[in-house]
Length: 262
Image 1 (cartoon, rainbow, N blue to C red):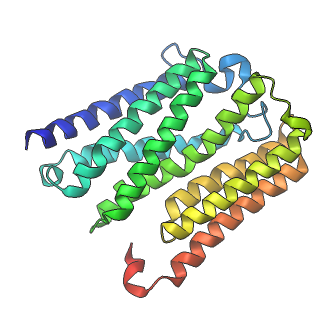
Image 2: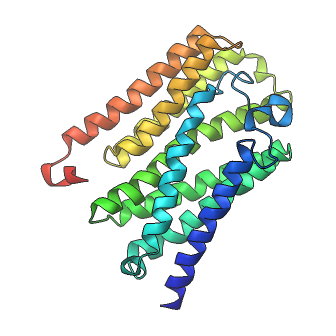
């Protein structure tokens, strides 16, 4: 159908837009590196929930996966597949929102960046739910659809928490009398509950759990090695990372045999 070809073309165009945004956000092509925008509000030592710089290397894996997905979904064999039809436009929306987030932080508009990343998170949740309700039947589905979207979702969950925390800091949020350390530990606790619940609901898929755990672990590293140190927050972050991975593993191991192939 014509709409299928339009979707395939738009996803390819969206991936190009996202890659251009990534290049700009990395500091090339005249852009400002993300840690330096908005007076350093998104740097590794801006808040207690900011991951250390190496954490962002996961974007290379995510972008590589998105490019591979864009090429795969453009194949004639994928055009009319129901799974592509149901999830393709949601992935496209995530690509465009990703670029919008980068443009907003490049402009120093943190409030707009929060709107963009919350919208991105919502879109990825919908895409993940759609894929969960319409299982794939191939390795390509497991890697290029479930795997890429899962990594994307797991990391954006971390990025959303970090972005909102930085935004609140710039607004002068005082924490209602609680210390920043208490707030950070409480938020890590909430995130852990959400991450574990997601692992149970999605039957132990590793991609979102690994991405979330990666971000949490680098929050822990940042709190031990950066200029904004906090041993309690670091321990909480490491524990959260380990627990999410263990829950995902436990759910996966306990699944019936036929379901484990995915």
